[in-house]
Length: 81
Image (cartoon, rainbow, N blue to C red; front, side, top):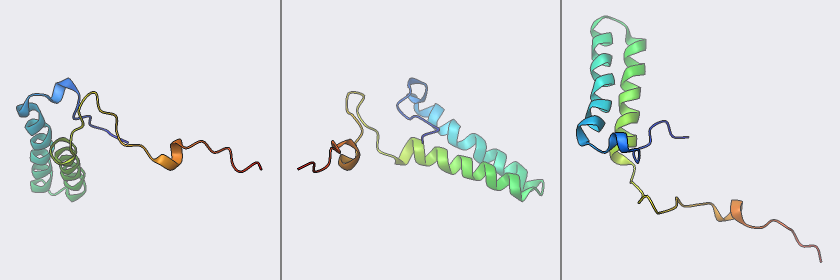
């Protein structure tokens, strides 16, 4: 399940992707400084996920289909011999 789609036109400018990662990271620091470690972890995790989804995961071309599992798409008629 994807929560962030790096192919969406909103994330085309680099500054929006960077801001999407930095905003929760900065708020995580605010929560940490205010003595709220639980909320700090939540916001740091959100920043880590955003960074991973927007910068680490390889992008596929718009006309390229994502890889599928052959076993799931194979016709399962069975051996009715």
